[in-house]
Length: 158
Image (cartoon, rainbow, N blue to C red; front, side, top):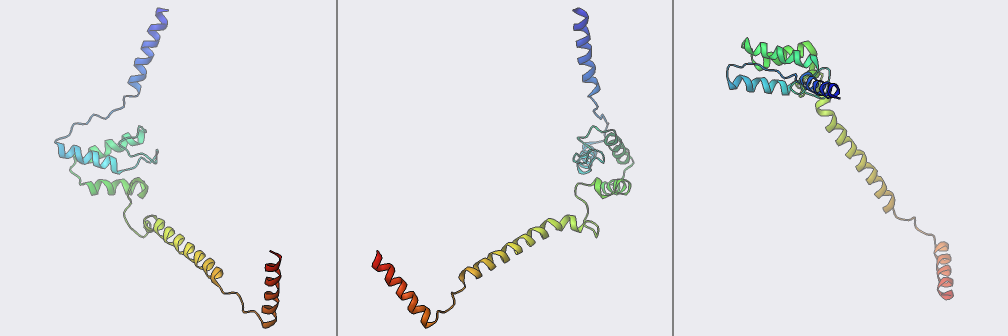
């Protein structure tokens, strides 16, 4: 029983160590730490796809964080670091890709679809209103007389 308890405690303690993959970088000042945090939140993990590299536990995210830290130490600007990552991994690595000829559909596509949907909806409503409000064709004299006789019969039976 003691062996099982010791094994359980050892297993739990090792499991905690295995998940403790926390980056411990020493920054020169708070401004550099802020830049690091901003950049790691701004860039997407190539493996996880819906996580930024700050929150991802993927090995590639750890490599990217290490690379950002190295470039910050070299004195590179945020734009130079982002450009390096985009050159290496493509526009996908940015959560907010720059507006360019390749990304205009990404930026404006949803709005175009929304406006197009409203236009189609307006055309459908307009057609339906038009067909509902069209006047009935005029009745000939014979048809009016026949209608009057039918209405008289209807009133006398009630």
